[in-house]
Amino acid sequence: MRSKLVLGATDVDISGGDALVADETLFEKIPQLGHAAIRSIYWETQQERQTRIIVREIPVGWRGDMYSLYLLSASIEQASFLDGIQDGFGNVLWQQPMIQDSWRPPLVFRVASSGKMWILNVGEPYEELADWTVYAEKTGRFEPICRISFTPDGVAPVTLLPKQVRALALLLDKTHGTGEGEGTLQPTARLRVRMQHVWANAAIRPWALEDADAYNSRTEIDAGLRDWAEGDASAKMAYKKILQAYPQAEKAMSRYYSSQFGLSGLKAAERAKWVLDIAFRSSFIFPRTTP
View (cartoon, rainbow, N blue to C red):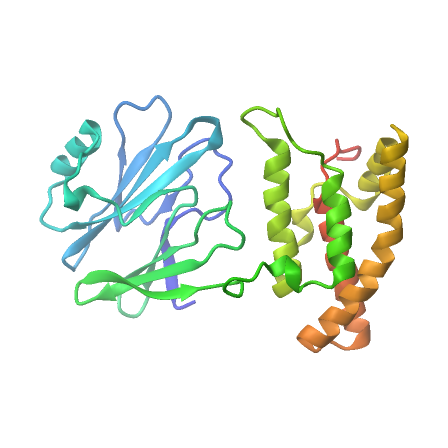
């Protein structure tokens, strides 16, 4: 890229706060009052336009942080903005963020040649391959200039997969149960959201998958499922159906990659084997038996 990330998160946030990295020559990091945890406001200090970029971290307990991005008139004083934050704002128009309460922090880039800023909003993690929105400077202000979509409008990506693959995905999903009564953590619901992303990538951009998407090795998954299948007759039958459906899904996926992406027979088979293994392993989380 011909731009540099000057404000944003460089990785998934597991810090419990203070997750953003900022170019200190462009942004002042201001601690927020009234928060026991470390949370900050990032105030742009060297703007040459009518608006100033400000990003605020908002703690939301065990769920992590939310982020809001403001584009304020350069004439507004820092003290006035901070007082508004403390007072809870209200309905003043200039106090409303352009990106509000996002679970993923907006990314601010600076073009190396011109010094102009642009902003990327990558959407919410619970949305299936969320659209990205690009905001760029125009006549001293920021405007949305581009929307990047990863999925066809009105089409669920999983429906693009061959019926044999969708059948396997359904069998794997049924092993999770209803997920009812799991309290605030909702592990089953979170797993299902993750699998929506995995299957969507498998359908339309398999190169975006990686081994790190799965927590367990194949050996650990196979051992965990065998133990689970010994629990009762219904579990044993479900496991048997999965084993029967898997090779059919792999062959169908190979044909799909050959026709959809123009891969040769061997490359399509290799890609299908790799993708299906990641999807299969991503469907479960068992205690690890090896470091």
